[in-house]
Amino acid sequence: MLRLGSMATLLFVLILSVFIAPVAVPPDSAAGQIVEDVLISLILLSGAIAVSDRRLAFIPLTLVAVVVIAVRWAGWFMPSGAAELRAVALLFALLMLALVIGAKVFGKGAQVRDRLWGAIALYMLLGVIWAAAYEIVNLRVPGAYTGMEGHASLAYPWVWIYFSFSTLTTVGYGDITPVARVARSLSNMEALIGQLYPAIVLARLVSLPVEDTRPDEDG
Image (cartoon, rainbow, N blue to C red; front, side):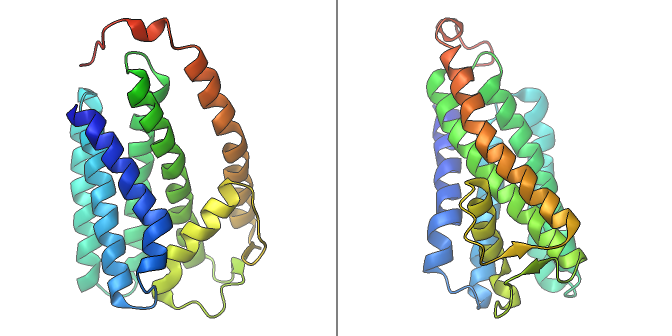
């Protein structure tokens, strides 16, 4: 129950981060970045608890989450150049979390309910992962995207979330456009995953009824 509740908590925090916080919190204020760091901390901690039954992954994931959270909050006391370090640390932790949740969703042993929560959370995590990657590209390659004019630096996290999910769902409004080669490659990759993921998850879930009648070996 703790793990299932934590997976639902992870999904809830992701929904807050993607849909509610960008609207409720002024992006051009320090409060926006504080809320971002709080939500990131909650994502990493609830994610680690949600996969606590994967013993070989839980301990390293928890250690990485603690280090990344420390780096994120320590960034407030570092020079402005620490923004890239914060983004890279976050990307690494999110990738690690996504891999563990992916193993839970597509592997053997998990119950169907847990797989469903995990599949939705993983899909949303993919959008957040690409948002972090886009932010890193923007920091490393000035002018990698057009349409960023008028956005204050503190607004970037919400902008990348918006651009990432527009790409993941292949909406493509065209207000922000990748122009650097690495930015275009990332965008194409995310759009392709956004198309393939639902089909892969559906195919996996269809094959589960017989498998999930066995007891949960990890529980």
